[in-house]
Length: 77
Image (tube, rainbow, N blue to C red; front, side, top):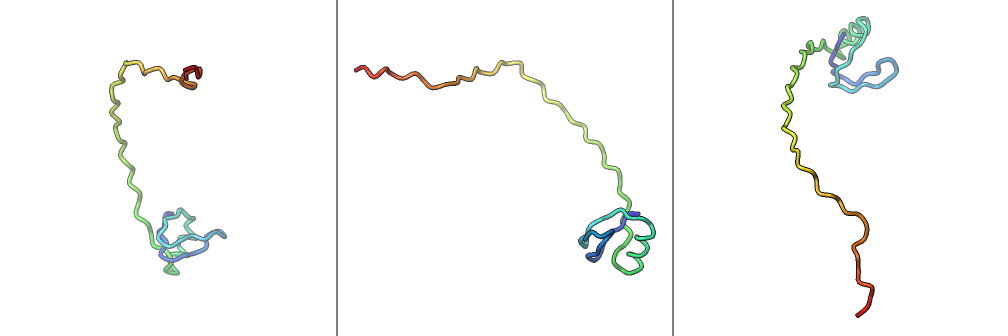
């Protein structure tokens, strides 16, 4: 069962902060709700899938990257 915690509590030996939503067994949920440490969380609505529009791919080649040091003079004047 999904609950929203209203106080900081320990669930199965782990601390859980107030305001977080957790999925717990019905027995634990009833205990938390009965002790006013949680309330029933609203059902999650399925998120709508976003349609991704792809941009057209440009077929222009990229400029060639040059590596290495630039050539320098040999030091002759």
